[in-house]
Length: 520
Image (cartoon, rainbow, N blue to C red; front, side, top):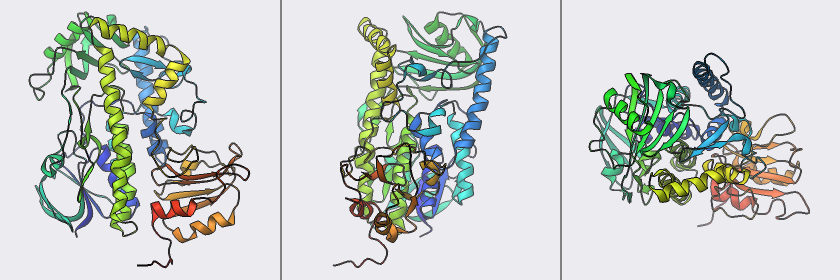
């Protein structure tokens, strides 16, 4: 084998997956046809699950710096709009935690005591980070970890058998144990492997761009709804979005011109702006499709290769990063002989329902954006709900995956959920102990029996004995490398009792302990 895994696609999802595989000891090559980071405008914000995943890998300082620079640009934009005054925003970040169908969700209306909304730690403060910045940062991390990133090299085909995959590229052939397609919504890997890709056809045409324009003083900042569609202006200078409901584009690949953008913005907004230059622009629709399974033999899919949907809610990148976090440690364990191939079945069973929910989330937003009377009536009701603490908390929790729970064995409320970023007695936080990409057993009551059970998993499971004054009811937490809780127990006198199920959880996710005698 030349490599354990070949990853097709060097965008954020492919790079994140490659980094996770390297942390798990796998030999990885990434094939990316582009030679540079794609400068075309894409997502400008990330949701909490994406920020949390990167935080758990030690990337919080870099994200915070990128956000600081973005906030500086936003404040400068607002000062320009306000005649040189102001520029600040109340509350967290821009004062909002996201939007549903262009209905902004105010940060000050979110009840942070809701489970999953107040326990992400410092990652909760990160949102204003563009997709290009994520790709750049992950590219640097891949280099540091020794990932072989081959830019300017495109996958042209492959042959897979029961033992390996031979990948054909524009630069020659590569033989690897596994192939993962992270090559976007038009994935070559998905098409060649024959994955089924059912879903719904597009109904709308959307444009997003950064432009230079005059006459924009009559364009409000934020999202606006009109009789002819929906549009957005800001939060950065020249950034515009138009949403029209007259069907999909006749030619999605046609160049996006200044004349076309100007006509569409005038049509939707009713403001006679003049676009004098286009810095970057893209066209997208609301088609929503998802493969029926994420694995076919030795070929797997992640990110947009596995699911496509509209960009509303900015959840696509987070969904793909979640795929990479879930798959990376599992595939690495299989390639290194630490786990059977059956572990990969949990990738589809855990991530497919998440992708299906996101597709419905974006479909529902399109329904609330349509200009017909019925949809506008629905939009008024959703807007009213978004003006309440209960409504905003619910929408924010769904946007940030606070209700996500994998169906894992165990009765503890934390089991199957993203682990809370516990603040520990030594001043560290839970995420500080996940940088290496290994599982973590937090022994919060100095229990030697717990540590004895985990002793056979050295190199796979790190054990930390420390108190947690803010959660005295917890006795121990076993966290998978992707940050999800595999097992947890409360202190004596509560149920389930400490140690119950820990040995089973360790063996289920991390194989047999070193030195164990197997029968067979």
